[in-house]
Image (tube, rainbow, N blue to C red; front, side):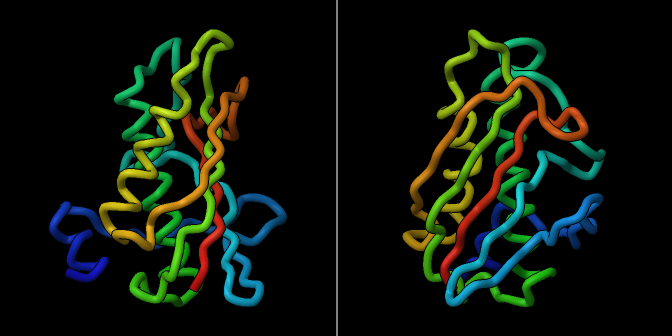
Length: 151
């Protein structure tokens, strides 16, 4: 089963990404690597906002992180013109979690993105990762994730 079939099996679609609201590009290719700018947690209702340890639990954070992973894949396909099956490896994710100072389960929140990427891309989705908490994110987002992808 290819990546698009796995997306369909999960009932997921890659929406066309919005344009950046600041002075940067959403995707940059260098050699065989693609660098994806930070993708905010968002769904069909807009930005998923909140703070882990305050008004969001780990499960809600994982769902928010999964939306970031979908946005990463969407940027690859729609902005980069690259098919998902061209991905050789998700090299690294950097996961930023809006959280209280005493919240310590950033790694569990990040699993929402990691698990989804591995499920869709198989072994090509296995990656290195950093996950940490921050006081706030743009537009009040709960999670932001950037990625390095090899094609």
